[in-house]
Amino acid sequence: MVASLATPVAAQEQPWDDELYERMVEMREPYNEQAASLDLGVADGMIANERITFEVTRGGETAHFWLETDGEKRITDMGRGEHENPTLVAKTDAATIRSVATSETPSAAMASAVESGDITFTGQSAGKWTATTVFNIALSVKSFLGL
Image (cartoon, rainbow, N blue to C red):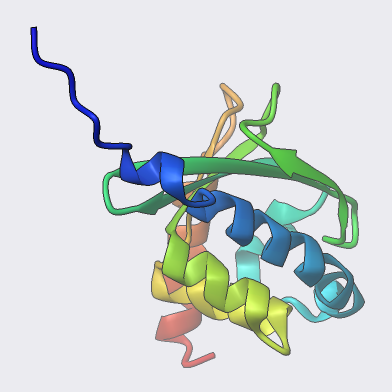
């Protein structure tokens, strides 16, 4: 029997999602200060009063973070892993969420990432339009009207 003496690379360094989560925690206060100005057009209310799981990919790995928002789109709670009962799932990559988390204007960076399709949302509730459908319609209308 041959045993490998090599230590896996992932075990040698802090996981990338630890650093990313810490940036998200640091971003919470400035984001909340600007949350009321976050403009997603027709779909603007879609991230208010929600429980959102973020599915963030980097290479072949996926990390999950969650947050809860109030009626003003402010982050009221957040944590690592998947939310136990999400109303939305946001899919993005590590570079996008890092740019939002490190931006001086995180609400504007979030709006830009959603508008460009770098962050996409899907709904979890049966019997209502999925957030993806509403966001796509809103972005199409916004683009058509030149807004």
